[in-house]
Image 1 (spheres, rainbow, N blue to C red):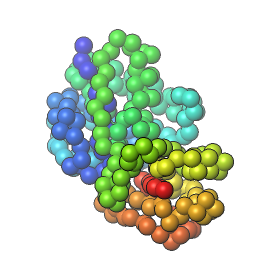
Image 2 (tube, rainbow, N blue to C red):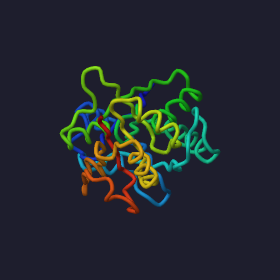
Image 3 (cartoon, helix red, strand yellow):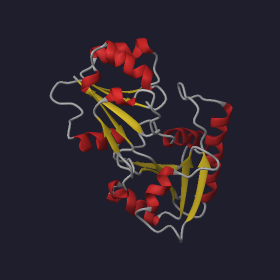
Image 4 (cartoon, helix red, strand yellow):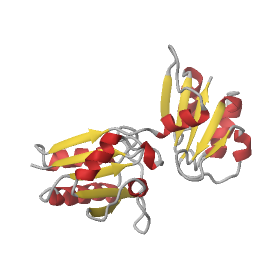
Length: 237
């Protein structure tokens, strides 16, 4: 039985793909890569192409619509995409090992684990291995030369799309907070950070690890501005 690999490709810089991830993709016959739009490109696949030649491999891109997932359930459209990806993977596993490159690390807000769960339902005995990658928050920490947490500090990673009451509770009780998925809620976040007197302790990293990466230490300059989807805020008290 051939093996299916879920591989973290890191935050954007091809040189941040792990040696193990690279070697595994080199020996896989097929790459099945996720993308957010039917007519768009796979960010994870673009990263991989910056490191290795895919000419002799079968490459299949599968669209996963950007809908909310709660408790492992989402819209029929998204769940249909998981099922379709699983069928494609199972079909290609007949010919050899298959790799699923996914942005950042598979363990952090990744489509990879939804595909994993779907595959396990369809083929419980299949061999699946997961190869970790460098997270966006780790890349941001390195770029900003600031730790995510030290000593007994509590680190919390949350989607910024949580409601204000939930975010307020997290921001007031945790020592270090990473806010992801901030691009559509920046103005609301600014108001909340101002309320809690945390704006000066927050740094925004836009497209960290990618071409055009930027660091914003003055968040008030981001008001009414459209940020890239790959933007992250780190708040250290």
